[in-house]
Length: 420
Image 1: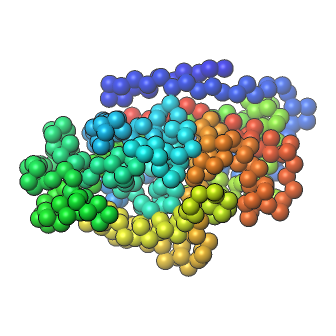
Image 2: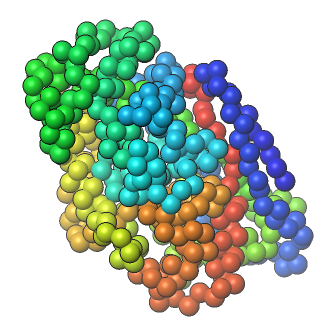
Image 3: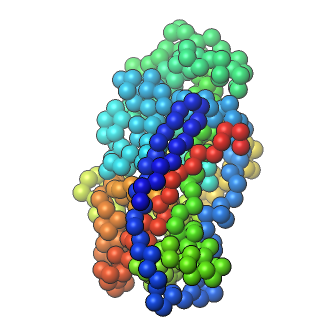
């Protein structure tokens, strides 16, 4: 069955097509029985238990409609790249749940990791696969200055906003300082690896550097106000759980027998253990685990969270920095770092953020490095290599049922209205 969803925002219309699998509607001869413990888990996974969009204390514009509209325009603007062809939307396409379905993201060049989907990010505490950013707005500032993504500088971003978005910017954030080639050289960047750009950055006055940083930070806050509104919609899984809780046999037929059996395996926290990391309405615990992908990689070893945790602490745009709107006591991600290190120790080596499973089966490939081409490849990897599962004897039929269940989490995305 092909369903079409039309999304309209800021004068742009997107037609999103979602092909849902034709799960068998045949009656289950012996309805699957759920224990009280299992029913409690099922209920906890329902999307309707997702709370309202949380406010980001470090971004006082996170619920500002005008900021969201400006952020959306910048999100699709290819001028924010060295070749004028790359925008945020190149790697985060609405038609692919705001990812790109590529093994590794491609901007100015090919990156070392896969694009993460932009669904429900407002509920995250950490951003990027390695968690090197502690807010959605600071995350938005990484790609522009990455040589392999957008390939520009924060001074270029400030110049573009001054030239093309000044009225909208000033209505939200206040008056901009004058931006010209003397006060803001477009190639200036605080990156010692770029000798020419770094020299130009150091040649700027401290006042001008801080002014550029403020404009750059506000750009990130506007983009975050837009991206925060991208959320999942109820899927067949959610309708099934509602039917189970209401003891509605007809409603339970929204999932096929295999899909129901796959769900039962998924929430088995003693043997299969998927639910231990993929829990809650977004099917993620939002933290980091080493499941053995880096160890199996044929490329350069990726340290993941072990490196990301240091980058987050050193980031000038983190929650405790001067461009944040938060009280330091509100900076939960940074404040938890000592506890995270104490409790996990070396486990952070090669660890990556647990992604949401909603809409995941519709958008391969998988893992942080795109190394698993299909969902079945993911299951086989866990069975053969993951420290959490390699000792479990899961049959191919069980793996197939788990894959079938993943299909039930697919649904059209939603972009919440900008006046919310």
